[in-house]
View 1: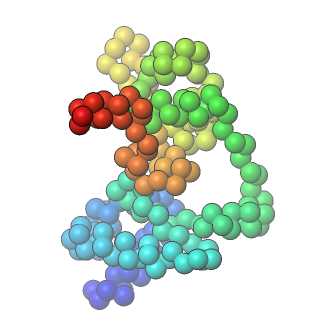
View 2 (view 1 turned 90 degrees about the horizontal axis):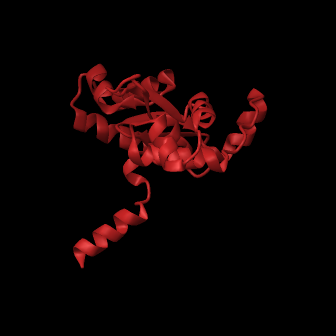
View 3 (view 1 turned 60 degrees about the horizontal axis):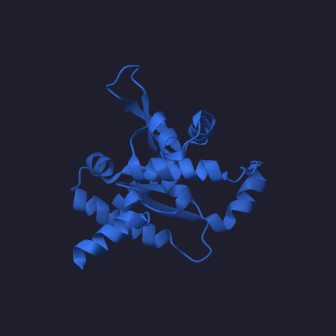
Length: 179
């Protein structure tokens, strides 16, 4: 298949999916190697990255997703009559940070770190699709484990958790080892 047709097929896959699609899955669907698929996705993302364009292709972990340009969020919200979501509370931000840096984690772990009950906050973050269940611990009661979602990455404008800032203790340890 020629390159323009492949790019068109990738564009159609991303548009139809609505969610992030892995490079591996696109390569398999189009019967091309992973490196070629990755390069074509990168080129396509660059092509969509125009100053005032309405659509973006963003990388999320090992996948890509087609989404609207944040510059046009107000217009999209008005046209689709979408209510603006309330900003996250300080408690929600703290829970997200604990989970993002330590995932997968149990509710008990988050509560131990924060020192307060986090049931309602975690439920709210799951409802907002910023956290998701990631299985269960092999302990009595088999508590749920939680991790961040692709929506969390998208909201933060990052493509993977490795782009999160380092914690101060990690920075100090690395400086001590280097010094």
